[in-house]
Length: 88
Length: 187
Image (cartoon, rainbow over all chains, first blue to last red; front, side, top):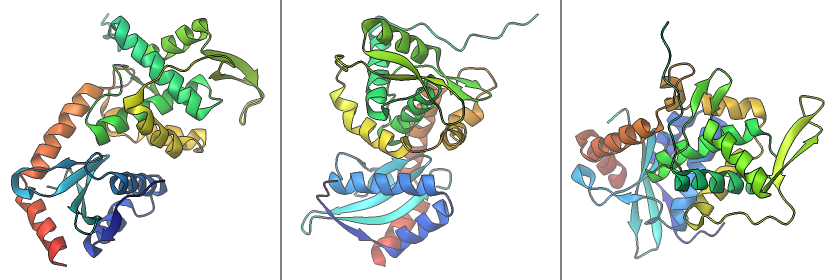
């Protein structure tokens, strides 16, 4: 797998993922695969959000979304949150 | 007597060709597969395309049978691909039965190219290739569109796409999510 951006995980993101996918190996695998794709090409595998969360990037995973920032200076993806689309 | 609406809508020639191309590409990546396994894999690829790319992979309709999602258009695509010599059906030893029919790509066949979705199908098949049949069915049955479909009726994948687009619009407008993002940035 060709990773082009460094991964920075906020504690909030890890806590969100743990709470969402605890005990579900398939869903955990899907989230991890999605994160890997985002790291390979963050602009291609997500969309730039507007509205109240403008400047944040979003990648969908099932009924959930990975919210992240792209730090071009350090060529890094900052994983911020993992939120349920039913809990917004 | 009340007749139920058929789950199957008519398809254009180009839509049918697209389903054949996706089917052939899935078989090429999964190697030896039964019709049953191809059906579940195709369905999950459709659902994950909606959830991750906000677009349908193809126009294939699926119905909610009790044993999981199943598609007549996908079955017809298999048959058309067999006639073209792209797919070959052979009998072989199966894990849970003495024998089963397996689909695979013919030795001299050319798999139709789908450049825009090749990477996506690589990822989908990497995730499901080694799942056993029971788990694969459980994953397919756990999807929201399957759970919301009435028995033996069409699974509303177009409606699911609309629903997810609306949910993502709501996500972007959410003050709660904006606060969650700010909390994460401040950490």
